Image 1: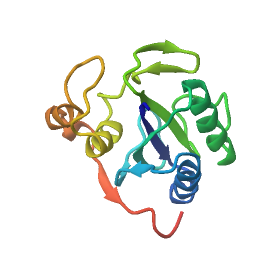
Image 2 (image 1 turned 135 degrees about the horizontal axis):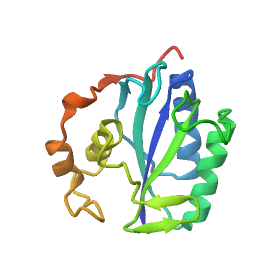
Image 3 (image 1 turned 180 degrees about the horizontal axis):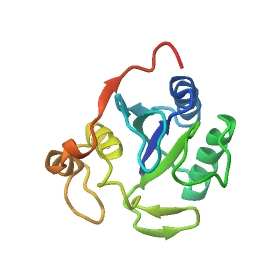
Length: 164
């Protein structure tokens, strides 16, 4: 079964939406693993900070079914399709990896293009899968994270407990 990794983020009632998303993801994919949660400034627009994490799971579901489920979970959080790319979000569930698939597929480019360029994605992924190799770059996620310039986008560990 392929290992699947998904980035989850929110900056509109982020704790509430991420707790709900984690429950839905765990119900869909038993054995779900989650990184720690991190707060970071919005990128590309002025807005509230995001809270982000990465989840991983194994599945025998086809890529299209995984994407369908992710969109349904986003929709349940009130995510509006067609919103501007750089804008506040109730919930983003971005497929990062589906096994070692590489290429463009309906609804996804794999691996996610900016995977090694965003601290809020690479750091949590390196936590969950430090020895897993990037299917294009060849380096492990631990190696990529170690070499990453973290001063360019600071992360602050936060809890999903309490509040919004």
